Image 1 (tube, one colour):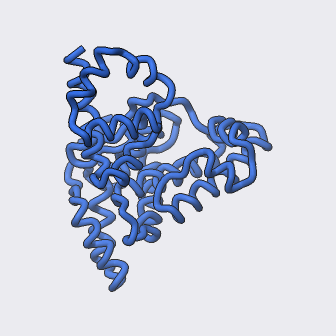
Image 2: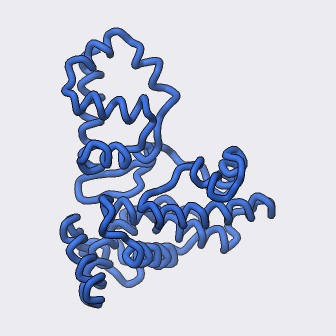
Length: 257
Protein backbone atom coordinates (compact mmCIF):
# COMPACT_ATOMS: atom_id res chain seq x y z
CA UNK A 1 0.00 0.00 0.00
CA UNK A 2 1.34 3.42 -0.92
CA UNK A 3 0.76 5.24 2.37
CA UNK A 4 2.09 8.50 0.96
CA UNK A 5 -0.77 8.71 -1.56
CA UNK A 6 -3.85 7.87 0.51
CA UNK A 7 -6.18 9.41 3.04
CA UNK A 8 -6.16 7.69 6.44
CA UNK A 9 -8.46 8.83 9.26
CA UNK A 10 -9.24 11.93 7.21
CA UNK A 11 -5.55 12.84 6.82
CA UNK A 12 -3.94 13.23 3.41
CA UNK A 13 -0.68 11.38 4.03
CA UNK A 14 1.05 13.05 1.08
CA UNK A 15 0.89 16.36 2.95
CA UNK A 16 2.42 15.16 6.22
CA UNK A 17 5.48 17.04 7.43
CA UNK A 18 8.66 15.46 8.81
CA UNK A 19 10.44 17.23 11.65
CA UNK A 20 14.18 17.20 12.16
CA UNK A 21 15.46 15.66 15.39
CA UNK A 22 16.46 19.03 16.83
CA UNK A 23 12.97 20.36 16.10
CA UNK A 24 11.43 17.42 17.94
CA UNK A 25 13.63 17.99 20.98
CA UNK A 26 12.80 21.70 21.04
CA UNK A 27 9.08 20.94 20.92
CA UNK A 28 9.46 18.34 23.67
CA UNK A 29 11.20 20.91 25.87
CA UNK A 30 8.40 23.40 25.22
CA UNK A 31 5.78 20.80 26.10
CA UNK A 32 7.57 19.82 29.32
CA UNK A 33 8.16 23.43 30.39
CA UNK A 34 4.91 25.13 29.37
CA UNK A 35 2.45 22.37 28.51
CA UNK A 36 1.91 24.05 25.14
CA UNK A 37 -0.96 22.42 23.22
CA UNK A 38 0.24 23.92 19.93
CA UNK A 39 3.71 22.43 20.47
CA UNK A 40 2.14 19.04 21.25
CA UNK A 41 -0.05 19.16 18.14
CA UNK A 42 2.93 20.12 15.98
CA UNK A 43 5.03 17.29 17.42
CA UNK A 44 2.25 14.77 16.85
CA UNK A 45 1.68 15.94 13.27
CA UNK A 46 5.42 15.91 12.61
CA UNK A 47 5.63 12.22 13.58
CA UNK A 48 2.59 10.80 11.80
CA UNK A 49 4.78 9.47 8.99
CA UNK A 50 6.61 7.47 11.66
CA UNK A 51 3.28 6.00 12.76
CA UNK A 52 2.45 5.12 9.15
CA UNK A 53 5.80 3.37 8.73
CA UNK A 54 5.28 1.26 11.85
CA UNK A 55 1.72 0.17 11.05
CA UNK A 56 2.88 -1.32 7.75
CA UNK A 57 4.07 -4.30 9.79
CA UNK A 58 0.54 -4.92 11.02
CA UNK A 59 -1.46 -4.71 7.80
CA UNK A 60 -2.93 -7.75 6.06
CA UNK A 61 -4.50 -9.14 9.24
CA UNK A 62 -8.05 -8.03 8.52
CA UNK A 63 -7.68 -4.88 10.62
CA UNK A 64 -9.04 -1.55 9.40
CA UNK A 65 -6.13 0.73 8.45
CA UNK A 66 -7.83 3.73 10.09
CA UNK A 67 -8.08 1.82 13.37
CA UNK A 68 -4.42 0.82 13.23
CA UNK A 69 -3.41 4.40 12.51
CA UNK A 70 -5.39 5.79 15.44
CA UNK A 71 -3.97 3.16 17.78
CA UNK A 72 -0.47 3.98 16.53
CA UNK A 73 -1.10 7.65 17.32
CA UNK A 74 -2.03 6.64 20.87
CA UNK A 75 1.38 4.99 21.15
CA UNK A 76 3.00 8.16 19.78
CA UNK A 77 1.23 10.30 22.39
CA UNK A 78 2.37 7.94 25.15
CA UNK A 79 5.93 8.29 23.86
CA UNK A 80 5.61 12.09 24.00
CA UNK A 81 4.27 11.94 27.55
CA UNK A 82 6.99 9.60 28.80
CA UNK A 83 10.10 10.69 26.87
CA UNK A 84 13.01 11.63 29.12
CA UNK A 85 14.95 14.59 27.75
CA UNK A 86 17.91 13.83 30.02
CA UNK A 87 18.64 10.57 28.15
CA UNK A 88 20.84 10.56 25.05
CA UNK A 89 18.23 8.83 22.89
CA UNK A 90 16.66 9.91 19.59
CA UNK A 91 12.95 10.54 19.93
CA UNK A 92 12.20 8.39 16.86
CA UNK A 93 14.15 5.49 18.35
CA UNK A 94 12.12 5.73 21.55
CA UNK A 95 8.81 6.05 19.69
CA UNK A 96 9.04 2.85 17.65
CA UNK A 97 8.70 0.32 20.52
CA UNK A 98 5.98 2.45 22.14
CA UNK A 99 3.90 2.54 18.94
CA UNK A 100 4.60 -1.12 18.22
CA UNK A 101 3.62 -2.12 21.75
CA UNK A 102 0.30 -0.29 21.49
CA UNK A 103 -0.50 -2.03 18.20
CA UNK A 104 0.46 -5.44 19.57
CA UNK A 105 -1.77 -4.91 22.61
CA UNK A 106 -4.67 -4.06 20.33
CA UNK A 107 -4.19 -7.17 18.19
CA UNK A 108 -3.76 -9.32 21.26
CA UNK A 109 -6.83 -7.98 23.03
CA UNK A 110 -9.00 -8.07 19.89
CA UNK A 111 -8.51 -11.82 19.71
CA UNK A 112 -6.75 -11.89 16.34
CA UNK A 113 -4.05 -14.20 17.70
CA UNK A 114 -5.03 -17.47 19.40
CA UNK A 115 -2.64 -18.96 21.96
CA UNK A 116 -3.02 -21.01 25.13
CA UNK A 117 -4.14 -19.20 28.30
CA UNK A 118 -0.87 -19.90 30.12
CA UNK A 119 1.26 -18.57 27.25
CA UNK A 120 -1.03 -15.57 26.85
CA UNK A 121 -0.74 -14.73 30.55
CA UNK A 122 3.05 -15.01 30.44
CA UNK A 123 3.15 -12.90 27.29
CA UNK A 124 1.04 -10.21 29.00
CA UNK A 125 3.43 -10.25 31.94
CA UNK A 126 6.49 -10.04 29.69
CA UNK A 127 5.06 -7.20 27.59
CA UNK A 128 4.20 -5.21 30.71
CA UNK A 129 7.75 -5.74 31.99
CA UNK A 130 9.17 -4.74 28.59
CA UNK A 131 7.17 -1.51 28.57
CA UNK A 132 8.16 -0.79 32.17
CA UNK A 133 11.86 -1.34 31.45
CA UNK A 134 11.68 0.67 28.20
CA UNK A 135 10.23 3.61 30.13
CA UNK A 136 12.76 3.24 32.92
CA UNK A 137 15.85 2.87 30.72
CA UNK A 138 14.69 4.80 27.63
CA UNK A 139 15.55 1.86 25.37
CA UNK A 140 14.11 -1.47 24.31
CA UNK A 141 15.13 -4.14 26.87
CA UNK A 142 16.55 -7.49 25.79
CA UNK A 143 15.05 -10.88 26.61
CA UNK A 144 17.42 -11.50 29.52
CA UNK A 145 16.35 -8.27 31.18
CA UNK A 146 12.67 -9.06 30.71
CA UNK A 147 13.11 -12.59 32.06
CA UNK A 148 14.97 -11.31 35.12
CA UNK A 149 12.33 -8.64 35.71
CA UNK A 150 9.48 -11.18 35.93
CA UNK A 151 11.51 -14.05 37.41
CA UNK A 152 11.02 -16.42 34.47
CA UNK A 153 13.37 -18.54 32.40
CA UNK A 154 14.61 -16.87 29.25
CA UNK A 155 13.35 -19.74 27.07
CA UNK A 156 9.83 -19.45 28.50
CA UNK A 157 9.72 -15.73 27.80
CA UNK A 158 10.93 -16.27 24.22
CA UNK A 159 8.24 -18.89 23.56
CA UNK A 160 5.50 -16.71 25.09
CA UNK A 161 6.42 -13.61 23.11
CA UNK A 162 6.90 -15.53 19.88
CA UNK A 163 3.51 -17.19 20.29
CA UNK A 164 1.69 -13.87 19.92
CA UNK A 165 3.73 -12.54 17.00
CA UNK A 166 3.55 -13.46 13.34
CA UNK A 167 6.91 -14.19 11.66
CA UNK A 168 8.36 -11.25 9.72
CA UNK A 169 11.44 -10.65 7.62
CA UNK A 170 14.56 -9.22 9.24
CA UNK A 171 14.80 -6.95 6.19
CA UNK A 172 11.35 -5.48 6.76
CA UNK A 173 11.56 -1.72 7.48
CA UNK A 174 10.52 -0.67 10.96
CA UNK A 175 10.28 3.00 10.06
CA UNK A 176 11.67 5.66 7.76
CA UNK A 177 12.99 8.97 9.05
CA UNK A 178 13.75 11.29 6.12
CA UNK A 179 16.34 9.39 4.03
CA UNK A 180 17.27 6.96 6.82
CA UNK A 181 15.54 3.58 7.00
CA UNK A 182 15.66 1.39 10.09
CA UNK A 183 15.16 -2.32 9.52
CA UNK A 184 14.33 -5.05 11.99
CA UNK A 185 17.80 -6.50 11.39
CA UNK A 186 19.29 -3.20 12.63
CA UNK A 187 17.68 -3.62 16.03
CA UNK A 188 19.08 -7.04 16.92
CA UNK A 189 22.52 -8.37 17.60
CA UNK A 190 24.08 -10.95 15.27
CA UNK A 191 26.23 -13.52 17.07
CA UNK A 192 25.85 -16.59 14.88
CA UNK A 193 26.88 -16.10 11.27
CA UNK A 194 29.68 -13.62 11.69
CA UNK A 195 32.42 -16.05 12.83
CA UNK A 196 32.56 -17.85 9.50
CA UNK A 197 33.25 -14.85 7.32
CA UNK A 198 35.29 -12.93 9.91
CA UNK A 199 37.79 -15.80 9.89
CA UNK A 200 38.48 -15.34 6.20
CA UNK A 201 42.01 -14.10 5.55
CA UNK A 202 40.85 -11.89 2.69
CA UNK A 203 38.24 -10.24 4.85
CA UNK A 204 40.65 -9.74 7.73
CA UNK A 205 43.04 -8.02 5.35
CA UNK A 206 40.23 -5.78 4.15
CA UNK A 207 39.28 -4.93 7.73
CA UNK A 208 42.85 -3.87 8.46
CA UNK A 209 42.43 -1.14 5.87
CA UNK A 210 39.49 0.38 7.74
CA UNK A 211 39.70 3.33 10.10
CA UNK A 212 39.67 2.82 13.85
CA UNK A 213 36.06 3.93 14.27
CA UNK A 214 34.87 1.69 11.45
CA UNK A 215 36.66 -1.33 12.93
CA UNK A 216 35.21 -0.52 16.33
CA UNK A 217 31.68 -0.40 14.91
CA UNK A 218 32.13 -3.80 13.25
CA UNK A 219 33.56 -5.22 16.48
CA UNK A 220 30.68 -3.92 18.61
CA UNK A 221 27.99 -4.92 16.11
CA UNK A 222 29.12 -8.38 15.05
CA UNK A 223 31.45 -9.68 17.74
CA UNK A 224 29.78 -8.10 20.75
CA UNK A 225 26.30 -8.57 19.25
CA UNK A 226 25.17 -5.03 20.09
CA UNK A 227 22.33 -3.24 18.33
CA UNK A 228 22.91 -0.15 16.24
CA UNK A 229 21.28 1.95 18.95
CA UNK A 230 23.69 0.57 21.57
CA UNK A 231 26.68 1.12 19.27
CA UNK A 232 25.56 4.70 18.58
CA UNK A 233 25.43 5.43 22.29
CA UNK A 234 28.86 3.93 22.91
CA UNK A 235 30.57 5.56 19.93
CA UNK A 236 28.85 8.91 20.38
CA UNK A 237 27.07 9.24 17.03
CA UNK A 238 23.48 8.77 15.86
CA UNK A 239 21.91 5.41 14.98
CA UNK A 240 21.46 6.65 11.42
CA UNK A 241 25.21 7.35 11.16
CA UNK A 242 26.01 3.88 12.51
CA UNK A 243 23.66 2.37 9.93
CA UNK A 244 25.28 4.28 7.06
CA UNK A 245 28.83 3.54 8.21
CA UNK A 246 28.05 -0.14 8.70
CA UNK A 247 26.52 -0.51 5.23
CA UNK A 248 29.38 1.40 3.60
CA UNK A 249 32.00 -0.69 5.39
CA UNK A 250 30.34 -3.99 4.46
CA UNK A 251 30.04 -2.90 0.83
CA UNK A 252 33.74 -1.93 0.78
CA UNK A 253 34.71 -5.28 2.27
CA UNK A 254 32.60 -7.14 -0.29
CA UNK A 255 34.26 -5.24 -3.12
CA UNK A 256 37.76 -6.06 -1.88
CA UNK A 257 37.34 -9.83 -1.44
